[in-house]
Image 1 (cartoon, rainbow, N blue to C red):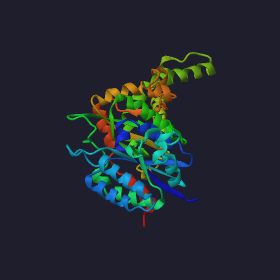
Image 2: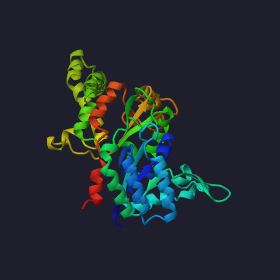
Image 3: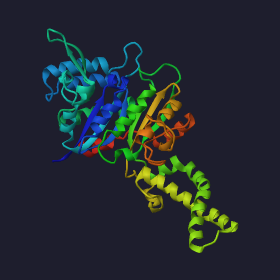
Image 4: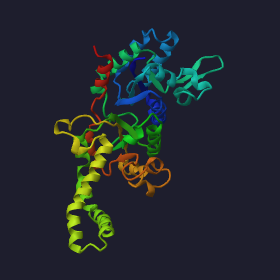
Length: 387
């Protein structure tokens, strides 16, 4: 069975109700699928109009469902009538064998919400009829494609608007008016080792902040990006680990030779071994975030995508940095409070589930490195649907 590329569009209502994590968790745990790309959109009126027209003529969708969906999209996806501000829609891409059918089955039918919670729509969607059988409320939670042809057509359309309507949706209708603060979160590679709900569960914890996600990207950090991102840490590790490495070395030497190490030997160890040990720890961080060992990477490959992936999210709102850092918890998971991200999902100081900017200035610097506004959808479309 051939590999396919499928999509999920998380609706504005689901994003406003902070159901994002639960939805991502449902799809990212599907066996045989890999979560490969994400992008936030603020759909323009033009995009919505064309999307609706194509849907009305889509033979893969039952005629009665076409009218229902067309009405919903016109109301829910188009910019706010009064303010002109866009609503947020998050696109997720998954690849794998029989991806379209797996995604479609996980989403469920529109009326799954009546009795079943086994599907995304059964849990997060609504399909309410009155006593006469007329639909009085409809919320599909997610929009997916019923066939490969539909997936190709929809992705092609949204990619035509990916630059103008996508990236960082900083003027979304769901954001408070006035100046807002942005902060960066990276859900680290340890959460993507196998299909699981962990990435979504972590997002669910961050949703307690009341902030809005305005940008998203599945990212494979290059070694060049990792060096720039974590560069300031190298000097800190070199200095901080001097004493630790010297004490460990002295214990080994004293056991081997049977006498205490003189002060001049300790100083020599501190000056020579300390920086080397610090660099080794720094290379370990690089390897964790990129899947590669820095000394083994040729200069010509420094800009290449890393071998592991993470999920970059940009949160926005009042006091965003402090709110996210509080929910994240301290660097060492053993010192974190129960209910924090790192206490729940971290293992040690390095494998600690997620990163979050520690100041507005750090957020700007880090966003400048990983570029969450960058369009990573096109390469995946070209891989599967390019002519």
